[in-house]
Image 1 (tube, rainbow, N blue to C red):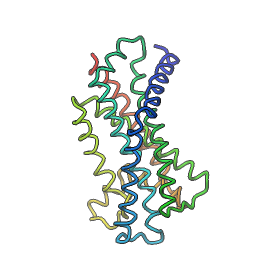
Image 2 (image 1 turned 60 degrees about the horizontal axis):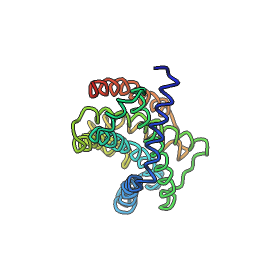
Image 3 (image 1 turned 90 degrees about the vertical axis):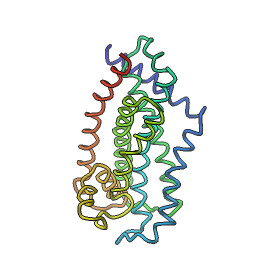
Length: 255
């Protein structure tokens, strides 16, 4: 099937996913509740006990929350696809003269749009609890673009997990298992130099910390170093690996 046809089919699936949001508002509501809870807990419960020299804790925290929000969106991507598989909707798509890639591309792009809305709301929430970004508007825009790239890459991980599991419950459990070590053993909530040496080596070099450090540098007008290029390398690399894996799993699942 030619690329133009595949793009058209993907846009149809994208539209299908987006029109569901107003009809099922609880999906977006619960996507917002979790990061808001993290903001309030870390800002007002743990913030007073965590030292971040040279920066207020809320300013230190919010870039990590933004990155965590889009990363956790990968779980929603997997659950949504698993639910479609369970209900037989994917089988209906297979019976139609459409590109097979459209189902996966349409879903991941729709999750990208959802994460854009959620991160925008979280930015407002952050400002309300004291977050004061110091970076230029262009730097902040670049930070948001890197978040969207991260969202897209991590969504494909969620898709691979969904296509590898047999139940929605298993997808939900597996989706969080790999995320928790990445998000909490990182620079998102505490400086990594407070961690044991062996854990600090992992935390400093894993992709989630790289993303958080890039976000923090751009939003707070700090030295960026190589964090932008490293983020691009990690996310493009993840996407380049996960898309072929997802495509292969999808063909096997629907063979």
